[in-house]
Image (cartoon, rainbow, N blue to C red):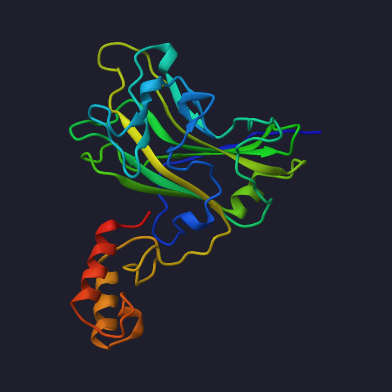
Length: 283
């Protein structure tokens, strides 16, 4: 039997025209890292870490904590030596009863797979000399669990000015077909946010920039749709001037879609609801 692992690396962020993973269909366990592992409180349940310290499982009460929602997030700091050259957190972890992995299920050619979430680089910091991104490892059925194919996506920006930035990457059925026919087919997918420094440690080459991850999500075969009440215009999954324009058109026409508080009237309360949803942004 032939086996292969093919890694595709892209730096392009896929938000416009692509479904932003939607919480109702999220296949991840503990996607916001809120619940600690009862057997190891230094890690969130459903996740295993590579070269992260207990303090990198961030609590909102920690000094300088960066948390998008809830009380927890994951931090990856610049590498300081060989031991921290690669850092990551992965779903490739056995469940407590040993029956299966926390890796989300995957149906071969059952639709595109979209991974999304948020990341933050603190104000004044820049990620340099480091690749930071998300890797999806498509794995064969148990008890094999070998990697059938893998795809890496680099985050779109090296600095976010201390703001949470959304990301979304998609592995299409065509990308899966392009890997080739190497049975047995994959039945699960590992989600692995990571950072990697491949250079030599020394003056002028030391990596910089802390990065935080929060509110991750993975879906398969989900059709793009509005991400919230303010997402009026296509492409769905991002909020722009076109959503504002579409809302105002519907509001002026007294279209039911603009009655955001469902009271049968078109007034300030609908405008306020739109502005609140727009300010919240898409996941």
